[in-house]
Image (tube, rainbow, N blue to C red; front, side, top):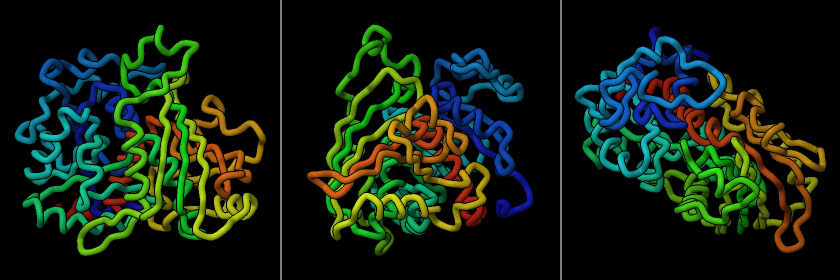
Length: 357
């Protein structure tokens, strides 16, 4: 599979100096379909070399070509790229992202601001690529020549991926989730060490409402130019734990029709996701990997499955209250954030959607 058109698409990163912005840099610096031509951030970083403006986190070096780029302000009049990947926090994203969309740019957003709007796709390519069909309605309603496409919260994405084949086969009625979320999900410098070391923090601001609403939208359907959420109920407990990368989710599921653990495991093992997501540059060979060991998945051992883009599921077993329970693990910065946006952009490129923006 190759992207529509013969040349690379020019892309920029908004919020490029933060943890998710840095993940975008890693994924886009040598991308076969996209040419990273600009990085943008807050006014305090604008004007500096990227290498001077960012506190690079990780053992690798900043890609040389990106290190020398000037940091631009997040202004569509200055950022010369047709596609922008947004790692902005919600305080900035609410005004900056629609400004780019109104200026004809396609925005691939990690921020929460527009996720639950009925005319804004909240996409996982393996799960709901057809949700991109609302983009024309979005442009008509909002008067944009560009658009906004979002990816979900870093805990919502793995849950939706696991639930997608199960909802299709059995119908999901109720979901109970408890998350154990890595400290990298809080950005850099994130959670103070004296708060998190040897500790669990049973609160992440605004996390539980996002999880409880986003999953239904991602598994919903398109009708009259809007996305209608699936009708099942989700309840979530969100916890921060002393793990660097990799969110773990313990999940119990009740179905519309009874299903045993072996039947559920077989459905998960066979699932390969939507056909049009296969073969995209960052798509894993297996979007969902089922582990049979009693003590897997584990963040340290499993978070880089599929280059960090695969969901790892284990401990599928009967639940005495619901039907089944299981444990999920996904890399929160890759599949749960930057990688999700890049994969969405690849899907859009394969569909030729950037050629129409």
